[in-house]
Amino acid sequence: MQLKELSEQTGVSAASIKYYLREGLLPAGESVHATRAQYSDRHVSRLRLIQALRKVAGLNIEQIRNLLQLADCGAPRLELLAAVQRTVLGLDAVSTDRGDIRTEAGDAVVRLRNWPDVPSDARNALNAHLSLMESLGVPVPVELLDAYSKALDDIGSLDISATTAPEDVNQLILTAAVGMHLHSRLVLKLLALAQASHAIRRYEPGT
Image 1 (spheres, rainbow, N blue to C red):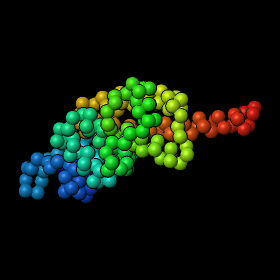
Image 2 (cartoon, rainbow, N blue to C red):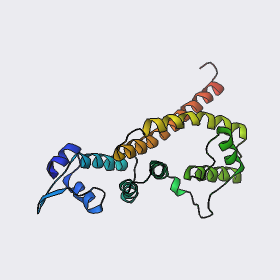
Image 3 (tube, rainbow, N blue to C red):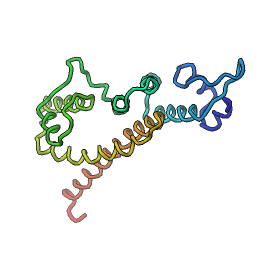
Image 4 (cartoon, rainbow, N blue to C red):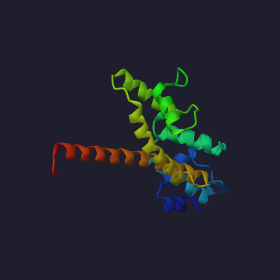
């Protein structure tokens, strides 16, 4: 297909497609003329991924470029998924200048759930948050961590199963990124409703 057809099929303007080509987010088409190129389903898949990362997950061009470079370099699936999670959930905002962050509460929850005892951005982010809560005088008892992590362990397992099945790397990133973004917000909305419902029961008896 030509540029016009690619634009019509994906709903992405020709100007945006040319921009993505210049930025290296979209691979060049097959040249058939000095000023003309042919595009394939691979370009359709990549464009849909770029649009979803921008419009749904809210990523900027540099963040998208970093993820696509990992994919195009053939990064292992675990490394790619870790990068997607780090970027989409903002885990890269946690400073790791001190190396891996450890807390007693964080170590305890890993043992409670029998999760792999290995460093990760997610673990650093949790430990940084636990450290912040401790510094603010809001420590988290092990019993609460046990209850929270037990519920979220099931959710995490379902999320990974649902969002990482595709073999195509573009589709993998798309489902993982959009899934992580939307599912994490769904969990927060459900938690908010649960909290509101318990507050109503407590403070408005009979409802």
